[in-house]
Length: 445
Image (cartoon, rainbow, N blue to C red; front, side, top):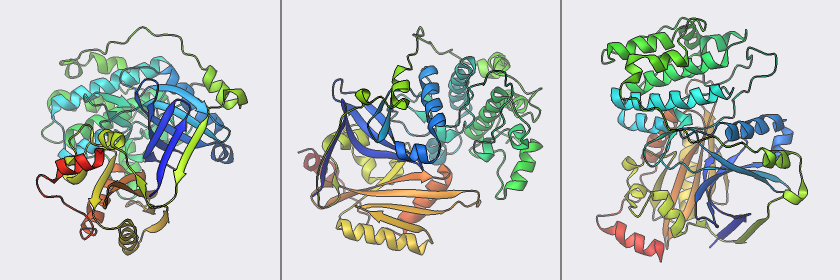
């Protein structure tokens, strides 16, 4: 068996819960307080190689500046000789987009409630001089109480002295404002408002207002604000969306106008913001100044063998309590950034089957230590698509395969996962009634 125990300062580090091109996000626990956190891990060599020092420093500083109940909180930032660790609030409810994928459009009241929280968060960012620039349902998380949390400030911008307009084209094409596509400079606040309008449309319709396979046609429709609202949109909702999806940023409604709108104000309870304390950026400075006496201690103990063993602590966190049914019923797993299935087959058989199915789907396959990365091209040919699968032993002869999106669109990921699992039916185990409780006893012994 391979048992891994890893500690970074006061944090005990667990399984990977997210993976991107330049960083991994690990589940971790503060050993002093017992609090669960998300730990974003980046290699210093990667940051230097891709000249990302200023971008990462900006992202960390921004997340410390924009403290708000509807924004994922950054607790602290740490560094070792080779890595940077960003300690974030652990948000358990998954992406808002997962909810839309599972149940389709939301009711108007539910959509409005999320939209109100989004506008509160964005207004706070703008008040602090921060523009998100990549607002989309994938970057909107839900906590265990269903409260919205804005995340991923990697593309955010702080205004530079004497510079009124932003010039970097960024964000996800379907949510990007028309002026961002023209390369002539744009107002970050107006661009964020447009993205909020697209999000409101998606929440209420269950699909995108601008959605084409080829980018030129997509950009043409965005530039002309060529969309139609479905018949179930109320007149008030349609009127507000029309004011937001105005292709002219000068006449587009502003945050203050949205907050005064009668449709928006229905059942609106402004967020109670606690008194702001002074933000200390000393830890950020220490990390990027490479101050050795501020380095955090890293300890890893590994015994080589098979796949990683998942302990009871991680299992309970993964299943959000002692109900393990979501681990075995893929239908119940929609409010998660990851998806997973369970198998009784040997770990090596699981990996070889995954590799064979992936190759039959024309995906590139990279496997190392019971962890497989699959890569392909997205459906609209606009970017890459990547998925990571990792095998864990959760009980003797019982393995869980954790599947998570590493790159690409969430909707495309869900389509892939459904198709992929259909081809893996031979290795997916479906326990009979009553077996969940027996497994729980086995796993937590």
